[in-house]
Length: 175
Image (tube, rainbow, N blue to C red; front, side, top):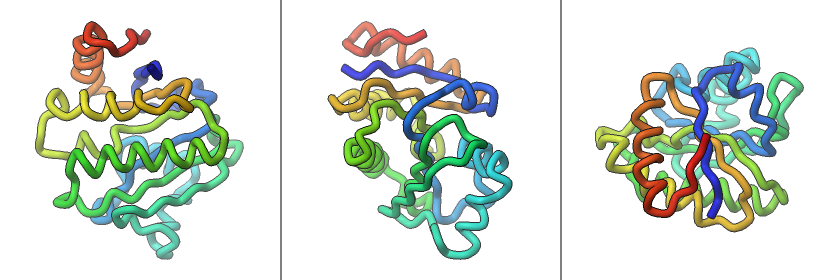
C-alpha cells in the first residue's frame, strides 16, 4: 500500500517536498484561489490566477492542466484539476480527481506526489466521514510510491486523527 504522509499547507513545508508532482484541486466558482492552490499561486506570482482570468484554465469539472514547475517550486510539475462548482462537489468526483492524478503520474512515470484534499475540505460533510474513502483511493495505485497530503493548519489534527484511526485498519502509519 502507498504510504501517505501529512504536512501543513505552507510554503516552508511545500519547499521541503521534493516530489514529482504537485496536485491542486481548483473550483470553477471560487475566487480568489484558497488553500494550497492560493499559496502556490502566490509563490508563482499569480500565474494560476492569470490562467483563470485568461480562460487557459477554468476549474470546470474534468479539466486537467499539467504545467512544468519553475524553480519557484520544489516539485517537477504542477497538475491543476478542475473540480467544477462547489454545489457539484461530491466524494465520488473527488475520488475520480484522485484517479485522474494517478493516471497522469503513471503517464509521466512519476512516483511521488503532494496534493491538497482535492475539495474534500470544501464539502459540507465532515472530513472525518469522507477522508477514509480518499485515503483508500490514493493507496490503491501501485505505481505511486508516496503521497503527501498538504492540509490547512486548522485541519491538521482532524486529518491526523483520521489517518491514525484508520492506520490500525490497514493504512500505513505516517510521521
